Length: 452
Image (cartoon, rainbow, N blue to C red; front, side, top):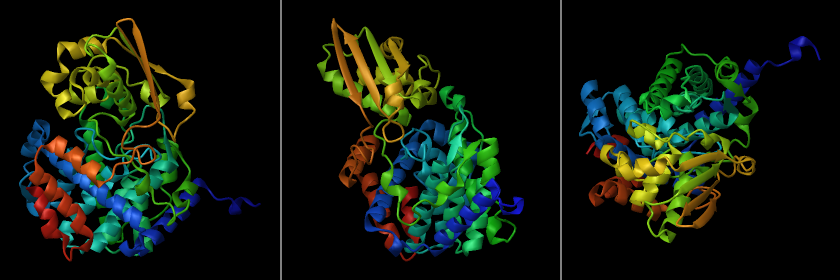
């Protein structure tokens, strides 16, 4: 084979991105299988409810006040106003991820939906787009982001927020703008060239810059699609260098595996605990063991065996809500003391409860080779609780809410949102918007209901 015939990693990324561009440009909502359409509706239902809950938090209210968002066509979910497309994309994305309740995907190793759904929805409101086009753009954003997540192996210590998912945000916005195959490919490539290089320690330290990475993904995806619409974007295989050489490794062939046959939106997980997804199997196990304890607040030791991705979440102290949400010892202690890990468990008074801080110091987190070997299909945890001379052991293969283990149906998502929001009228509104979006002749009035 001659040197000229050898394809470089950039060539492979460019060709795969071009194939994605053709697929996205030609995607129609009617082409999406019924179960994938239904799953997207559940993702929207969950995401809308979680955005409203995030918007209620004092940190989010302070951010909106400091932002002083100007008037515009896009609803600020739960914020009582409409604002510019970019402001809505940024602020709605931060609300979506603020409490660690956003839907995720274990094979993408992150959150494909949150990377682009706020941007697509804000743009759709501005364009007064038909529901079928909006739904197609939303599923394109999810699928492309998930494929980039599968294709990317980030360097150790990197957080996935705001990196590979920008490409998905760009794809969804480009589809909504009606770009052709070349235009979509150029947008996706440009999005792949605008990742955030965020360190996981920022989350462990409780630094809210982690939320901003997801906001940046949405706004960068909008920018990439607008650049492509203007004809000032190109597809040069940027991901090979940005996501590959710089941020980790990148396998372009994964981008087009079973394209149009495997729908990644089917394989995500919903979150019932307000904490990092790596802690969820642990919380599930502790909550199942808790009724067997005479006094859940008085245990001698808790040993958590888990996989390598979760083993680093071992800090036994925290000085913020976000830091607590990324601590396995906090989640164990909160589950034992409060009997849940809902947002109120990480509020200032609850997370500083002396019982919680004392119990967290009795939690030991250990990486287990046998659990590591079961990745990525299982994100397992084995929990041993020692108390009053007894030893209770429970192993959980995946968290409740995982599509392959304990999937949520609509009733489960509605029950979760009812418990979190405590407002049946709001739950009914987000249900109606999620259900009605694909058939709306103009999504703007429907989405406007979310500003509330």
